[in-house]
Length: 468
Image (cartoon, rainbow, N blue to C red; front, side, top):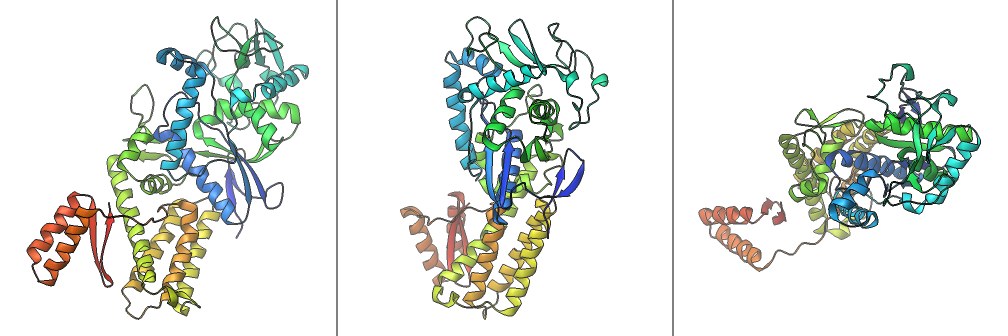
């Protein structure tokens, strides 16, 4: 098998070949930290976390960089609303971002450079563009001269002549061409600013990623990722900036995830239908949110509804229950888990895991990879129902599951849970009721525990409990 990635630049699937054997340079555009992460932000976070997980699983060392935009117009306005500083706003929402990442079972990036800590890199980048004739200054603002970069529009397939003046391109009389974009913005009175050759100001949005990607990953990245909405103008402008200086491709592979709709409507602030991850996490576990995100191919649009989340919850519970039951069965005979699994189990697991990898190798086809996990669930349940199954078979089942789950992360590492005195009392009372064949009281206790968020499972190996 060879990993195939759909490259937005060529509009085709291509075999993935990194520049350096065994190592991948990966850059994903990070958040502008002026508010809490919404469900639309969460999709690229989960998608590219999964991409990174898979690359690491098949043996690559991944240098994964995602930035924080911690100064721009939105942060300035937010600081005014909150009667605080831009730095304090950034700190509040960066901390909230880390909490959401943990709540989504997303691993931190290798590096998270901040714009405010990269100002010298950014200014130097703009100076180089100016020296080469790709940038010009007017009134303290510095603009990129798009007419000089002949390939502007190649990534997004935009035709500059067809851009609607005043709609797709900001009207600014100081620009040579309407499609020129800002690299450095002169500071208004009282605004946060940095000194530069063009006066006090701060960087434009697009230049930040070009400067940080070059500094931490080099002129050419293996994979550059982000949401579909970033193709134009953000990624298009990144290409123009970086390639004007290096003469090399900014990235060999461009990956873009599709939009999220809310109840069949495109999510937008104007509609007021944005859903915050911190609120969704109060209702649903990380595995449920990840399942929802990964059950549709990353390039396709995704529709968020109450029903879709409840369905994802049921599906992840089914997977988690099978995993938990296999672990419980193995705990009953840990010494018996040594040696080779039976031929039948080995053959089935080889086929299931092989199919999982085949689907992931096909442009990270997570919906079909999840189907492979359900094949594992069926095999696990059938093996659990077989009284003659060996502990080595259950050990092999868990090893196969761990390999797949390390990529998708649909269930967390199971921790030892403490029931609490009241729960333990009710469980003991129910056991006594069942022993005395008092089925009515047994059912009553089950309902009481269910109302407390405790699910009981009567297995061939005895009664077990877990939290919802």
